[in-house]
Length: 250
Ligand code: PGA
Image (cartoon, rainbow, N blue to C red):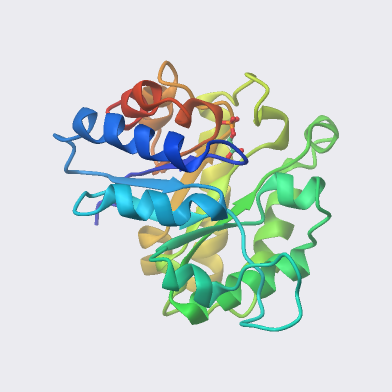
């Protein structure tokens, strides 16, 4: 079974509503011929509505960059899974390294979010990846497996295959220093092997695993040639419609 590639834009904390609308208007005609892959935009929460309006009747998928795991309550500043569903989000990025290392999110918290997202009918994009000092100490595999183990705890074998995992080495994010295609391939093979041993072959065959970290129009095709890499999670190079369209049409 061939997995459908997924190219996801993570806009992080960028753009106004007007800029978001202008992006979509310029981006859509550039990807009009694309049929065989999924294209996802994850804007900051205040821009989700604007992107949803602008993408109407287009194949663009919509996602959020984060959420809280509770459905409602006294959680000032937070956004619930139900609110994202209500805004027509289909995906949510969880455990992004900026959430882990700037905002102190733990694997336990991320796992609660993963479970809450699934319960609400959102597809989690769980991000995992090692820091530079961990790579230098040869801890890459251990770190990835530990984040996977804790991140997918309690996820049923009937739904794991619908999830998305993004391997994003922390040292490659926003640095211009992208992982080699071989390193990305090896990490992604390790993640798929983990899913295989825990959930069996059909889940391992089905789950989409992306690479993220300084993905650019110039290096996207190199990753997509690797067996097992199902797409990209793109930060900086997704902010400009020209550049993101080039990435999507790699
Ligand atoms: P980058 O970010 O493409 O700017 O490196 C990727 C990410 O953080 O998802």
